[in-house]
Image 1 (cartoon, helix red, strand yellow):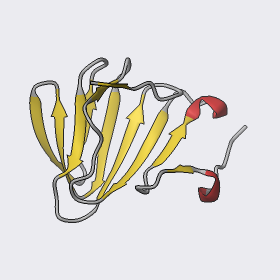
Image 2 (cartoon, one colour):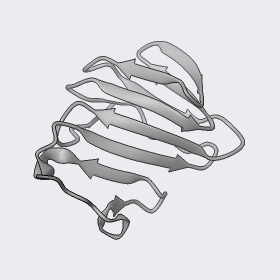
Image 3 (cartoon, one colour):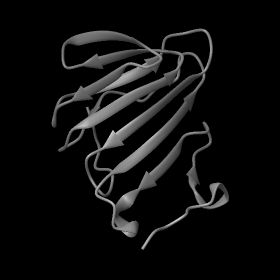
Image 4 (tube, one colour):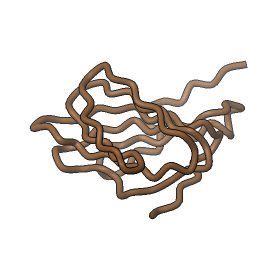
Length: 111
């Protein structure tokens, strides 16, 4: 069994971010495909599961707990469950980022 989700049927947000929640397809993960302008990014939040980020292009500044991390294309960052975190496009161009949630649906608490 397999599923193909055409681009036209994907959950695309006004800021070009795409959300895929795997539960309805039998997948144990959810993914945000981020495509942000400089300065864009979510507010501080937590999840009850780990999250993994893969920076595809651009630069990002991550806040993870009390730490600030600068990341560039090719970097992978993993945050533990219940750790407050956020990111912002800290570069001058677009930020492409894949956010992998270890859950078949996104559970997010804003801090």
